[in-house]
Amino acid sequence: MADEDLDMLSTHELHDRAIRRAEKHLDVRFFWSLLQMIPAAETVSGDEGEGDFDIQFSKGLIYDALHSGDGKLGEALRPAFLDYLRKHPDA
Image: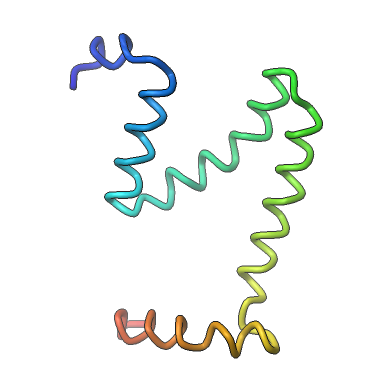
């Protein structure tokens, strides 16, 4: 689709297309950049409380991911770690 055609789409349609494309290509970088932009965008759009909440929530998710190998959580996720490493033996 040409740039000028994209400009004619609604924001909702642009969102849906971008999300579908990122999901199809497992584009984690896009999702990460979106997560980084959302709190500021919420503040600019007038919802400062939601922006602050999202920052704290995102920090919690990142912390959880980094420590997902600890204790009972780690044991529960063990099959996921094994599956991932078996699929990527170069690790």
